Structure formats: C-alpha cells, structure tokens
Image 1 (cartoon, rainbow, N blue to C red):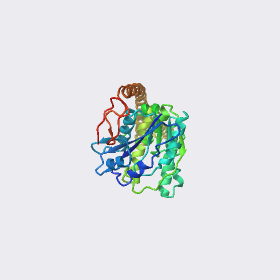
Image 2 (cartoon, rainbow, N blue to C red; image 1 turned 180 degrees about the horizontal axis):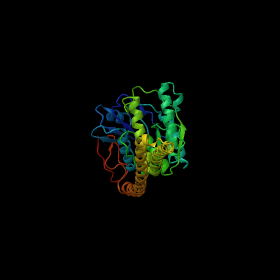
Image 3 (tube, one colour; image 1 turned 180 degrees about the vertical axis):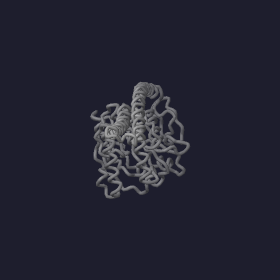
Image 4 (cartoon, rainbow, N blue to C red; image 1 turned 120 degrees about the vertical axis):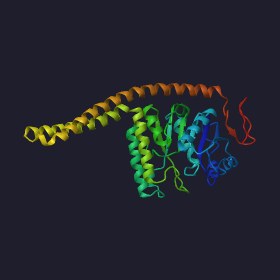
Length: 338
C-alpha cells in the first residue's frame, strides 16, 4: 500500500520545509509514504527547501498556472508514482501532518473513496465572522448540489483512493475543492469527512484578491460544475421561472382585457409572449445539454480506462524529478536529478 502526499506550492519557501518535515513516514496499514511537491512556477527556493526537508519527488510548472492546474498535475504524477492513496495538503502549513493517519483510515477500511478534513470553520478563532458565515453558506450549498454530507467543502486537506483519483476530471481553472465534490456526488463515489485541527495561516490567501472575488469565482464554479452533470435540472428550473413570469403577464393582460382596459397593456402582453417563447427555448437547450452530458459520461469512462492503461504502461516515477541521491525502487525507472 503506497501513499503519496502531494503538496501544490507557489512561493512557499518560508513554510514548505515545516510542512514536509511534519508528514509522518510510518502510518498503520501503509507500506510506504512518498512526498510529492507540485511546484507551480515558484520564483523562490520552494522546491529546493522542500527537497532539503525530505521531499521525494518534484513535478514542476514552467510558470504559475493556478491551484486547479497544480492539483491536476499532482494527481497525474501521484498515479504515475503508483499511489494507492493520495493525500492533498497545502504548502502554507495550514494543515497538520499528524492528521494524515486519521484522514486515510476510512479509505484503508474501504468505507470511502474520498475523505475531506473538517476544520470546523464556524468555530475557528483565526477566521473572521464574515469568513465563518461564508464558509457555512458555501458548504451548505455544496451539500445540496452534490448530495454529499461534507461539512467543510472548501477544505483542501483531502485523501483520495486510486479509483477516485482515476475518475476525477477537474476542468475549472480556479479551484478544485468544490468541483471535485460535485463530481464525486454525480459519480456516486463514497465521500466522508473526519475532524482535523487547522493551524493559523501566516499569510493571506492567494486564491482570491478579495471576498467578493472569491464568492464570484466560487459561484461560477458551482453553477458550471452542477450544470455539467445535471443540465436538465438547471435549464428546467430556469425555463419554468421564465414560463411562470410569462404566464402571469398573460393572465394579467386577460384580467384587464375582460374588464375593458386591455388596450393599455399590450406592451406587457408582448413581453409576456417573449418570455414564454424564451422559456421553451431554454427547455430545448436543456435537452441538448443533457445529450452532451451523456456524451461526457462516455468520454469520462474512456479517460478512466486510458489513465489506467497509461499508469500501468509506465514505470512508477517515470518523468518525475526525485530527490538527489534517491535510488530507483523499480527497474527501468527514469531518474532525472533536480
């Protein structure tokens, strides 16, 4: 049983050493623990410091591509390393390595495919009241859309089984946390959460420039991800709202017309008729989107099988940069020193 801890990083020189050193290398039920750094175009010594602290492999981006891209790169690299379980944590020392055994336990017992660390954000003293409320509202929204019971949806401290990692396809360019939960619910993956302890962060979040920016990007991500997997519900709801508004307008005109005052409300009748027509058009778009979603499911199944073949045909660690002096564990493994 091989566990790979992936750490997406961007200019985390000040904290990455502590994060790597804090990761336990002996976990009950796990034979080997590897640490993979995903250097997202850092301009400081993030990768060097991580390797000095004991990281095993580094996957690099030539430039900063964002958290979602770094997460995707980490999943692919961890699968190429032969991971049976993948843990994702942050490079800012927000999460504690001592919680990793608790995080992977439900997967080891085959009770879960994905486990999310619950920081209990509504009670964190270093979170502002505004941030606590937003976290609670956001997590509730994700639970309703995904059908999962995760109380801390934005948490990036997560464990994935190999099966779950092979099936997830992150398409957003912003953050993976919300989209992967909606995907997991749509694909009927078993999702659970465990309580963890969060450290106070030493810097401001780089994910969003402001609270409004974070809300805007999160809403776009949620709507896009949900519409991708449940297009009929999204377009049917929108079409019904437009149809209801149109029918109410027509009923209003008829009421005035029957009372001899219809000539003054022709404009509202025209607007109501347009709303009814648009409502039917939205419904048709929903049907087309549902057909596209069916094709997407076929493509995702093909990608799943392609990933299985790809990871099986390459030696573990192929194309990744190991720590200097690390010996190959597998004959034929490609070694590229940092």
